[in-house]
Image 1 (cartoon, rainbow, N blue to C red):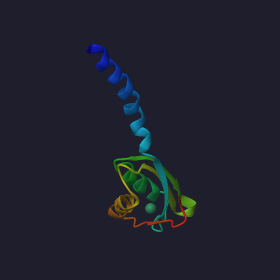
Image 2: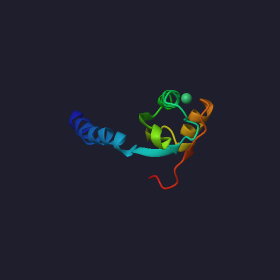
Image 3: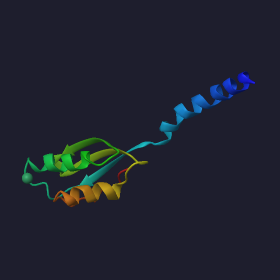
Image 4: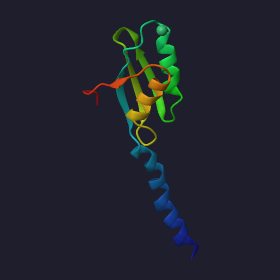
Length: 98
Ligand SMILES: [Cu+2]
């Protein structure tokens, strides 16, 4: 019967639309002590933006911090730390950040 399939599709379609909401964006603060001149943040920002899942990079040069917003289903803090480290700027996640 065709109507049964249609009903099933009507039930499944909304569930599929809900799935992306499970991947919640997270923000982490990285302390990058090696950012000593105004050009450094550009390199750090570029390195982080290359990481798949990163949606926003906000550099606070005066505090030597970088706020990174990312999809925790695609990447994690360790990967972000590695990305800045590989670019020449070792970083440390701020413990209190949530
Ligand atoms: Cu510099």
